Image 1 (cartoon, rainbow, N blue to C red):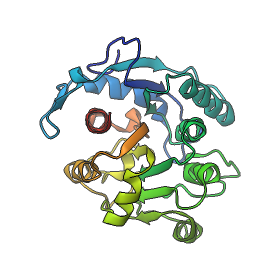
Image 2: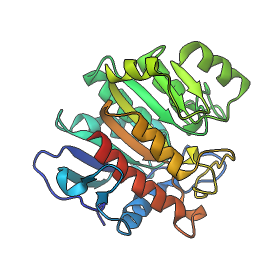
Image 3: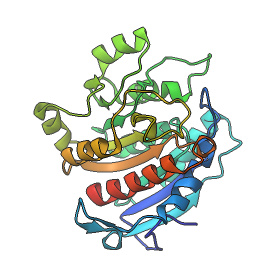
Length: 274
C-alpha cells in the first residue's frame, strides 16, 4: 500500500523510501514495521492540510516502496540506504520512513557528498550522541555521533532532547550548534539554517508518550502533537534536501495513535518543505 496521495512521476519532487529495520533498536524492538504502519495510517487522513493551505495533489510525490534490508547487518543496511539515496535524481528530496534511527546515517552520508555544507535538524527525545551502545557503534543510540563524524562541529541542531548521558551532554555543549529540550530556536540559529541545505530527521519519540506510545524508548515530558506541528511551522521555509520520520513501533501501538501521528507529520513535512 503506497502512502496517501503518492503517484508515479518520472521526476518526483519527493520520493518516499521505506527502511524496515530495527536491529539496532534498544529496549523495545518493532520499528521494522514502521513504514507499513505509517502508510496504512495515512489513508485515514486527507491529502489537504488546512494549517498549510496545501494539498499533496500539488506535489510530485512518489512512493518507491521498501528497501530489502531487514536481515542485513547495520553497516550493510546503512550502505544500502546510501546507494538508494545517491541513485535519486539530484532534484528529488528523499523522505525515509523508518525503521530505527540508524537509517538516518545512510541518508546523511549520501547527501553530504552532494551538499558539502549540509546541516541536520534533529527532533528527538534522545541525544543519540553515544560513541557506542553495547559495543556497537552503529546503534540508534549513536546516530548523531556518526553524523557528527560526517559533518563536523556546529552542523547539528537538536530540538526536544530531554534524555542525555553525562558524556552526551558535554559532547553536545562542545560540538552541536544547538541542543535543548525546547522546540524553539533563536533567530540567529534560524538565520544560519535558512542559508544552508538542511536534512530534517524526526524521531517520533520526541512527542510525549501520551501522543506517541508506540515507540521503542518512550520518554515522558515531551510536547503535545499540536506543539510539535507549531514548532515545525516556525522553522519557516528552510531549504530541506532530505527528511525522515523514524522509530514507529506498531507492536506497542495497538490503537494506531503513533502511526497516525507519524503519517500526519509526513504529510505536513512534505507540504511545508517540498
